Every structure is written in structure tokens, then in C-alpha cells.
Amino acid sequence: MTSRAYEASRRGWTVAIVLGLVHLAAFTDRYLIALAAPALKADLRLSDFQIGLLQGSAFVLVFAVAALAFGSVADRSRRTLVIAVSLACWSAANAAFAFCSTFGEMFSARVALGLGQAALSPAALSLIAATAPHGRIGQVVSIYTSGSTLGRSAAFLGGGALMSVLASAPLAFAGDPQAWRALFIVSVIPNFALIVAVLALREPARAAGSAQNPSHAWRGWLARHWRRYAVHIAAAGAATMAIQAVTAWTVTALVRRHGYDIARAGAVFGLVVLAAGPAGHLTGGALLDAFRRSAGSRAPYMVLALSLTSAAPAACLFCLGEGPTAIAGLLALTYALGLATPAGFSGVQTMTPRAMRGRASALFLCCNTLIGFGLGPPLVGLLTDQLFGDAAVHLSLLSAIVGGCAIGVAVCAARLASLQAHMKNHVRKTA
Image (cartoon, rainbow, N blue to C red; front, top):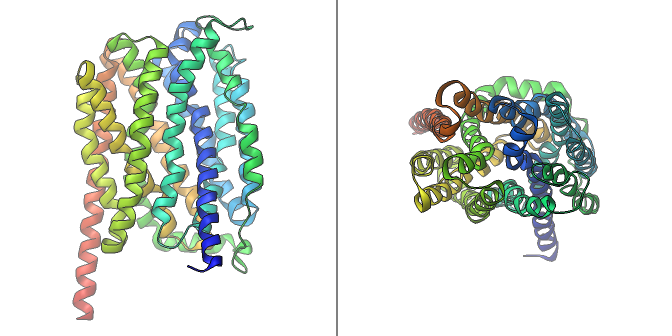
């Protein structure tokens, strides 16, 4: 490897690590509300459906639409600056959540959080794809997506421990259950260092004319290939729906079904995510690169199908098991669902020309978020309120997970069969 190639490779890994840390911060700030959900319910007398709306729909409403606009911005602007501004905006929104006293105020703060985070992944994925070492895009993207699971772990594990400390600290809004307010303020402090780190990254030169790529070129490309994107989004969205349902309601399930307090439930789930989440992402990225060498465009769907097929029985162990069996099921479920994320994100990058990857990532992020966040958390809350009852939230969670997995596997199977038939036809025509 030449010195120039080595330097480019090193830069690519550095970009992935820094942006992985930013992704970690995004998901920590996004999921603190799942840890605080029992306290919010007790303090403000919210229903499970309202909590589901705060965790899912409130965030996703603006996030999904804004992500589409930010895709174009990512293709035209300095991506490091876009990411830094995004980080600053969502940090302010998360801190503001601490001062909310009504459901409407909380809903507005979560909308602002979604708007702030909407710019992150279109710019980050475009930057990562532009700097990734040759043949390693699956692994590089898996570092970025691992930040999401580490962020969830930080929210539950670190947030649970911090909440215990804050509950006994002499703060203006300390005490049970008001410690959650201080938690939302303290959580954004590390984000200032990340803003500096992002601005220090070197922005790679774009291909000539790429920054001026007209929107109609993207629309023309999408018009010709929309079926591929639709299938990919449906398969990945099913996995995301299951992931978001698990993330939003596991702490509540541990509290109600197993009798944990909030801090212990957060610590247990945080440790599970820390142990199994990044391992699933990194394994998924490695499998994706390996399958791509032998199976080409079928690779993302092979990994997604493997993930979802493994997740369903693991969900049964977690939701229906007791004691260590339930925790083992949660570990297996977290690992299995972690396999899917790199396949979803990197699959969009490899099927899209370089100059359009910001827009493609934004489209994927918009639809994936609408499906995952918009359906997963509210669906569990609705099933609990209307069908199973508070004491059986684990059954609502199981229904959402298994339903999402079944839909995803069916989409993957259909897509793999279509690609196999296309390959056979191509071989027959060229023989």
C-alpha cells in the first residue's frame, strides 16, 4: 500500500469513528425518553399511547420530511458543517425538554429534536461513502451504525446510573420522579466536544460538477429505479420497526413484568445493548462485505433475512421467558436485529451514484424513520391500552416484533427470488 493510499484509508476510518460517536450522541439523546417513560407517566399522568407518540410520532413528523430537504443540502454543501449545526440544534432541543410541563410542550420539544437530527445521516453517510477504504464500505458503515446501539446503551445504562445520582442530588428539580429533568440537561454536555471534532474533519474533494448536480437528474434516476428503493426500504423498515419497538418499551416491560425499578431496568437493558448491539452491527457489516463478493446485489437481502429470521424466536424468549431466560432472549434479540442495520444503510449507498447519495440516504432515512419510529413505539402503546392492558405490555411488544419480522422476511424472500430469476435470464441470454 502506498503512503497516499494508507493516508486515505486512515482518514476513512477516522471519519467513520468520529461520525460513529456523533451517531452515538444522537441516539443517546433520542432514547433518554424511553428510560424516563415510567417517570413521565407517573409525573404527568400520561397514557401509554401518549408516551408512544412522544417516542415515535412526535420525533418522526418533522424528521422524515426534513431529511429529504437535507439530502439535497448534503449533496451540495460542506458536510462537516451540516453535521456540526445539526448536533448543536438537537442538543438545544433535548435540553429544552427538561423544562416542559405538559404533553403539548413535550411534543413540541421532540419535534424540534427530530428537526435537528434530520440532517445528520444524509450528510454523514455521504461523507463516509466518499472516504471509505476500497471494498470495506459494509464494515465502515457498521462502525457508524454501531453508534446507534452504543447510544441506546448509553441512554439506558449511563442514563439509569446518572438518574440515580441526580435523584439524591440537591438540584432544583431533583428527587423522584423529577430527576429525569436534570438528566436531559446533563446529557447534552459532551456534545460540545463532538462539534469541535466534526469541524476538524477534512472534507474530501467532490467529483467535478457533483455539487451542481441538478435535482431533475435525481428524479430521473429515481423514476427508473424506484422499485429497487421501495423493496429495500420495506425490508429495512420492517427491521427498524422491530428495533424501535424494543428500544422504546423494554425498560417499561422490565419494570412492569419483572418488577425492576427504573435505574435497574435501564442498567440491565443498557448492558445488554452494550454487549450485543455493536457485535451485531459489526458482524452484519462483515457478512455484508463477504456476501457481496459472492452474491452481489443479493447481499443486503440475505443479511436482512438472516437478521429477521433469527429475531422472532429470540423475541419469544424475551417476552415470554422469566429471569435469566428472558435476559438471554433479550441478548439474542438485540444481536439479531443489529445484523440488519448495516445492510439497510450501506445497501442504499451501493445502489446509488456518488453524486446522488445524499438524496438517496435522505429518502431512505425518511421512509425508514416513518415506518420504524412512526409505527413501532405507538403500535405497542396502542395494543397495550386497547387490547392487552398495562400488565401485559410484553405481549404487545411481542406482537409488534413478530409482525415486523414476518413482513420483512416475506419482502426479502420475494426480492431474492426476483434477483435470482433475473440472473438466470441474463445467463441464458448471454450463453
